Picture (tube, rainbow, N blue to C red):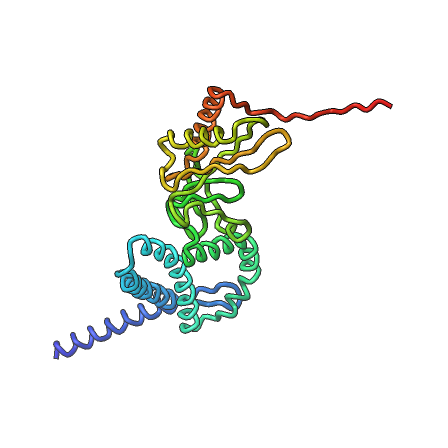
Length: 291
């Protein structure tokens, strides 16, 4: 008899505990006039987010297991934003399934969402441009690019910005939306070597064959100028005050081109002085007609 009584008391205790738990989980929090959510609903949402996180991690491993290391890092950037989109969708679906009025949520936050949308318009443009860069491979890490008259070597490509280092060792942070609005020059997309040039003018009456020889000599003696393809000299024009020439040569690292061009100009000036070839300054003949 005593055992039956003890079992009955345990049943009552367990029942009271369960009722207490149910009562606690059923407590509602009201937000505004139309939105009500219970503690149980919050736990369901947390569980759904946790399960979604596990599924997304498994999905990421399956997708990236055979990708090269460079492509894997780029995919991780896109995945980071895709993940938040999935979280938002799962959150809305879960809230709707537990009885939360999603329409009321949108109505309550409509003004806020519009304000955020206007404020983040440029951010969304950056993200879209970043996706284009990653998909069509316009720019790679290590490329030398020129945009808005600024030149830098790309060191990192993110979904919102691209970071590049200038020749002066300054970090250039480029919002990706600028790629959609401006012409982008990728100096090294075809190859790491580039063809560069130096312009020079000599006085009329100079030995043009000697000029050509000295220009080629200046290019061949510089360590940074590649022997192949060979440097060439073009006689570009008969100018107003000079005979104009262009020395075209190949560099293995165009990032330092302005220093190499400076060296070549020093050498050209020295060779011209030694061989009595003058670089003229602009001249004008004035004819005075007396009446």
